[in-house]
Length: 82
Image 1 (cartoon, one colour):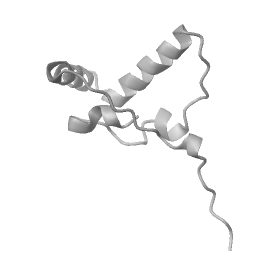
Image 2 (tube, rainbow, N blue to C red; image 1 turned 90 degrees about the vertical axis):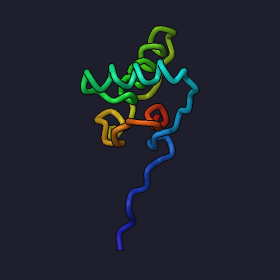
Image 3 (tube, rainbow, N blue to C red; image 1 turned 180 degrees about the vertical axis):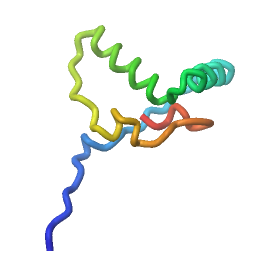
Image 4 (cartoon, rainbow, N blue to C red; image 1 turned 30 degrees about the vertical axis):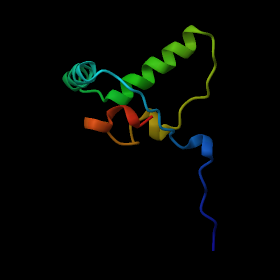
């Protein structure tokens, strides 16, 4: 019997929970939806840009996160998928 590969903890998505004004959240979700992009994708891009701006190197994200295979993030939990 062969052993199944196990994902390293670094390869698993981590959750980021933030508090945001309800009106800003609705506006942000609507804008993302109008651009056919998930809230999580935008937040991940903002984080990448912030890290680069401040000279912080981070390893590339696993393919499942880069490609959006971690699932869409919409509705009440939109900012909880990263």
